[in-house]
Image (cartoon, rainbow, N blue to C red; front, side):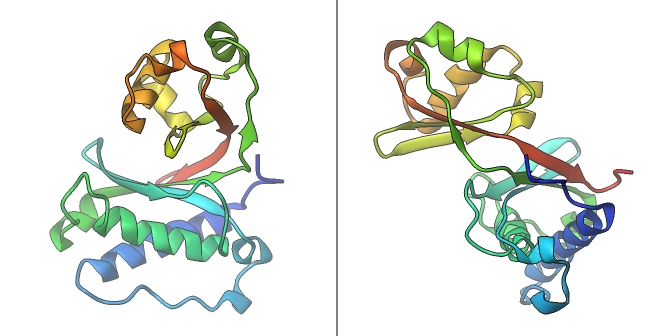
Length: 193
């Protein structure tokens, strides 16, 4: 996990930044400016995030990265914009939808390889509800955030769906050892105490 976690104020700032970015994007304006020098150190340090948008409990957009390459605040701003406008699974968010969106941010830890010798051992090493999982097979890869365990609590079904998301047969993980990486997230959303 990320050392020490984010403070309540840092989380609130990032959620407000995400909402302001989306509000600007849907009316064709640039995202709000960021003065990194005035931000707390944690928000200036590299951070990897996913920004998830839901509307009436249904997914409306989700974009992010697995490895940090820019300051955390910039990462949230970039992925809030992308989740609202560029998620190919959905049409761009419209201005009249913004007030109906719930914003969730997942702040990722570093990826850790998960070594295993067979499918049964793979399932035994997983920590449902805790680990996000990345699978790789050649140039293909896919990930599920730890929150996906809520809808796919069975590890075998989790991997079936993850292989399908990667564009492979759902049983691939049972017949071939894939490269597997895990990570954890610090998840927070609007309305959280």
